Amino acid sequence: MAAVLGLDIGSSSVIAGLLDGRRVLAESPRAFFRTRHDGGRAEVDPEVLLAAVATAIRGLGERARRVDAVALATMCPAWVALDRDGKALTPIVTHQDRRSVAEARGLEERIGADRHLALCGCRPFPGGISSTTWAWFRKHQPGALRRADLVGHLNTFLHRRLTGARVTDPSNASFTGLYRTLTLDGWSEELCANLGVSEKVLPEVVDADVIGGGLTREAARRLGLPAGLPMLTGLMDGSAGMLLAGARVGQLFNVVGSTDVLALCTDRPRPHPQLLTRALGVGRKWLQVSTLAAMASALYWAREQFFPEWSLEDFQRELRTLSRRGPRPGCTVRFAPYLAGERTSIEQRQGAFTGLTLATTRMDLLSAIIEGLTAASAERLPLLRATGTALRRTVAVSGGADRLDRLMHRDWPGRWQYRPVTDATMRGLGLLTPRAR
Image (cartoon, rainbow, N blue to C red; front, side, top):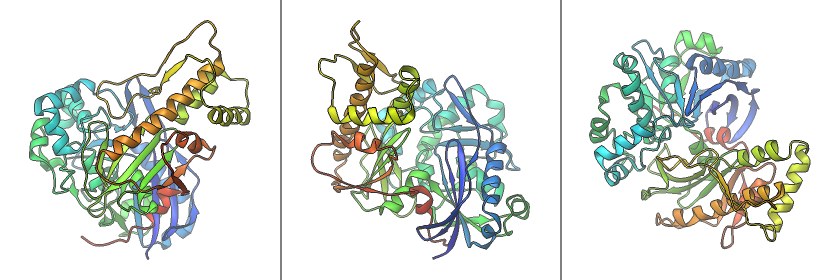
């Protein structure tokens, strides 16, 4: 198996790792970059992100020069438009962006909700399916897009700047809202026409383990790596984690963190309006995904607002106690768990408490948040079963270092076994075997 330099690029930092199969031999310190939030916007400066990639790689020292290939796992969507020289014409617009609600409605109304779902595998969720972002820029900043030579996601940007290639993989293509996700047979003329864009500015779609290109001399100098070093096309971070989990049909992979992501691996995708359906990125497999946009972030928001005098350890201890006890006796408070909106809704929902009285305490509010989250976690299982893929009873779990995974699985009906997987995204990249186009 090839020695791989893995790049794990999330929404706030880059980590570089030296990989031997699924073993991580070394990791760099996190190289942080800033996401600008302004109302519903979430943007990253492309040059700042590129600098963070270089910082992370250089953090590995000379050992980084002795690898056989570079592999990418990126946040997604992370949409950007480029000119002929590969320079960004727009910021990188991330999956947290929600500015394009009106544009999402327009895309769906023109083509029809059922037709869009059948072609794309998902509804055009604002920010989460990047055609809505593209539609926003066409309306509000048309000048930038008139000069666009290539439009894609973060792995396309990195390839264009580092190798000169114009590529993406099926997992990223799925979340453009322009790809025939369910058949994996290319860009959809119908979806492109609905958006009003030409396929000429879209990247070539190849599997994530295919070598997209080799590092240019300029890129190699910037990164401290050999010129010509092959770089794989790369895939979404969640797909890399599923590869480590085994990527067997029926496998559930649960990432428990600020956001809680539950993904089902299948070989027969069946779109559902409340699920995200996307290609795995290698082979003919797909992921059907249900996400709680604010999970741990909702709990730690409660700590900041209601328990600022508690230490982190005291707060986590109370979480464990409340989650074991279940609802507080006599508590009438209920919580809608949408503090960060909903990934599978065009009209964004908001978090809310109901049932408040003058007798309500801060412990009631915390208990209500816990109960709202655990209920929402369990409610995802019937949605995934409705796809027709039998669920394996052993669930691969990533994250949950503060035991929030136990809380989130508390109300799952039936018997389950939970298998922890650590450093899932980075180790999953090590399972990609480089191959030529």
